[in-house]
View 1 (cartoon, rainbow, N blue to C red):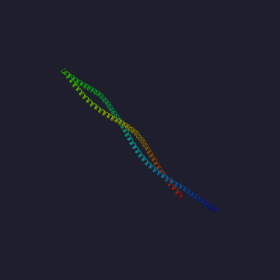
View 2 (view 1 turned 120 degrees about the vertical axis):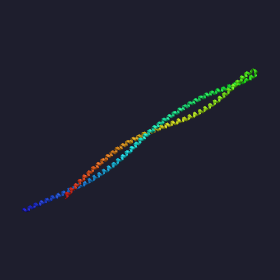
View 3 (view 1 turned 45 degrees about the vertical axis):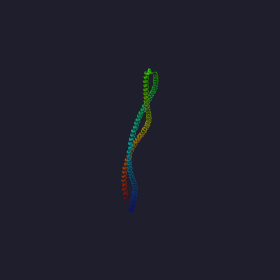
View 4 (view 1 turned 90 degrees about the horizontal axis):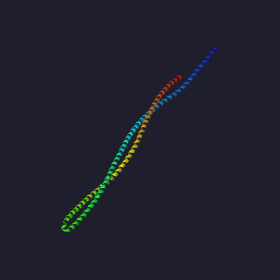
Length: 303
C-alpha cells in the first residue's frame, strides 16, 4: 500500500515536471517568435535608416552642387552688375560730351549771329555810302550842266567879241579862258562820274556778296540750331539710358546679394543633411547591433 502511494506521487511529480517543461518550451517558442519579429522589424528599421542616410548624403551632395551653381550665378550677376556700372559711367561721359557739344554749338551759333549782325550793319553802311555817292553823282551832273552853260556863254562871248572887232580882243581872250575852264571842268566831272559809276558797281557787288553771305549765314544758323536740338535729344536719351542702366546695376547688385544669401542657406542645409546622414548612420549601427543581440537571444531561447 505504501509502495503504491509512493509511485503515485512520483508519477504526479513527473507529470508536473513535464507540464512545466512543456509550458517553458512553449513560452520560449513564443518569446523566440516575438523576438524574431522584433529582429525582422529592427532589420527593416536598419535598412530604412541606411536608406535615409544614403538619401541624406545624396541630398547633401545635390545641395552642394546647387550651392556651387548659386555661387557661380552670383559671380556672373556681379560681373553683369560691374559691366552695367561701366556702361552707366560711359553713358554719363557720353551725356557730358553731348552737353559740351550742345554748348559749343550754341557758342558757334552766337558767333555766326554776331557775324550776321556785323554783315547786316556793313550792308547798311554801304547803302548809306551809296546814297551819298548818288548825291555826288547828282552834284557832278549839276557841274556838267554848269560847264555846258558856261561853254555856251563863252561861245556867245566870242561871237560878240568878233563883232566888236579890235575892241573885243581882250574880251575874246577872257571868253576863251572861260571856255577852256568850262571844258576842263566838264572833263573832270565826266572823270568823277566814271569813278562814281565804278564805285557804285563795286559797292553793288559787295552788297550782293554780303547778301549771299547772309543767306549762307542764315543756313548755318539754322543747321547749327538743328544740330543743337539733336544734341539736346541725344543728351536726354543718353540721360534716360544712363538712369536705366544704373537701375539695372542696382537690381543686379540686389540679385547678387540674394544669390549669395541663397547659396549660404543651401550650404547650411547641406550641412544639416550631413548631420542627418551621420545620425542616421549611428542609428543604423545601433539598430544593427540590437538586431544581432536579439538574434543571439533567439538562438539561446530555441536551444
